[in-house]
Length: 94
Image (cartoon, rainbow, N blue to C red; front, side):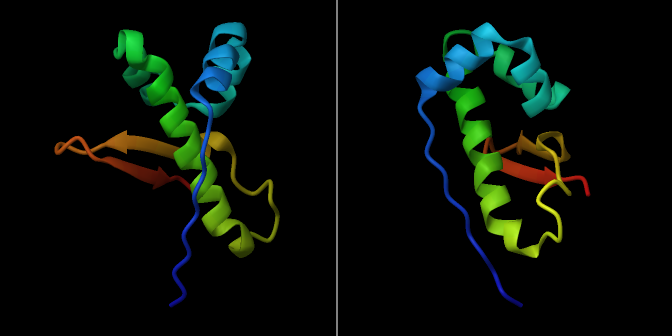
């Protein structure tokens, strides 16, 4: 089995601007549970939005060569969650 890894780096200020300026951005990228989680972080919410964005990007990079159609998965098909140990984990719904 071939294992791939994706990485992504994001500027928190770019995500902050997108979150503040566009509910459409938030609703197209993040699942309801991700939004709820990030919004509970008050002053650090933008870091959490950015981390989830970067994690989703990394997942897409890691699996992109496995997809027949790059539009096969949407942003909301991938969810970043925290485990009981507070470690981030991901779920892919398709």
